[in-house]
Length: 140
Image (cartoon, rainbow, N blue to C red; front, side, top):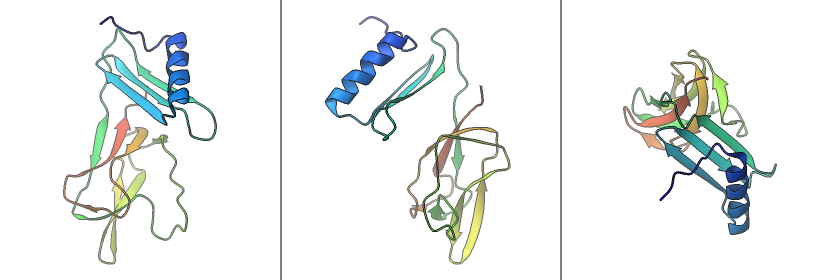
């Protein structure tokens, strides 16, 4: 199998068209040289995000882990509607979620600056100490 250049705009356009025709919502391709994310059904048309470079080594994403066991809240419980938009830039001190233990809410900070790329735990899920909650990609 030959190497495919996922940074080539023509290749990305062909993949996007094929995904749209197949009714697929999106695709993520990761490799040692980078990552390609295609989202084709977000209501705003195709969205493409390419990180890394085919010839360069990229820094890997960092996982934010639960500091304690409890119920995971992606947003503060007092917020009446889901306002989470990902990906988004965060600083090391930003609160990105909460762990609820009874009536106590423990804020979960990003711990580093970067792009909060993915939520890895479902809101309302019971998580254990060290469970993955979010993924942060280093800022480029």
